[in-house]
Image (cartoon, rainbow, N blue to C red):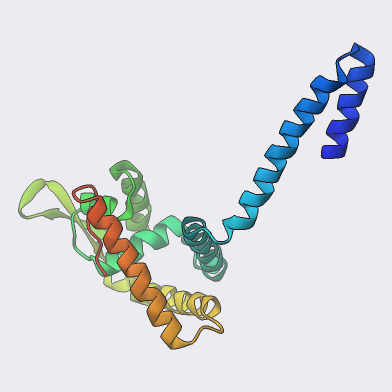
Length: 192
């Protein structure tokens, strides 16, 4: 890319009679930018935020590959995973836990309800609200989901000793607790 830019710069200088000093100055700025970008890229792998984001992305990709034959989308899997831990909660609570809009969640729930994976019931304490429950017939699918998750986890933790995994989880949970405390009132609270 630098050679291309230099070639274009030299051509422009000869065709437009531009000052070589002006072009050299811009090439120096380009080199500084390129150096900065290369340096930044080298440190990307050591960035905690980037590493967490990249690992989460790779876990999703791996899980998608495992679950491709189930007929459910990643979003539907997510809804079912949250419901497995929070069965019977209000629909708006599920949306908060998943950090998605209630309308987006409603579309996922509509599809899951049509396929009989979940059911929505009126909330006895709030007639405006719906509670979401996993259907008993979803048990086998939840087992498949769990097995796929175990396969992905085994791939992800290959070569990591149990002590290191436990330490990593302790640190990760502390980071989560710190961020929840820093965002007090803004975080809906996580369940384990």
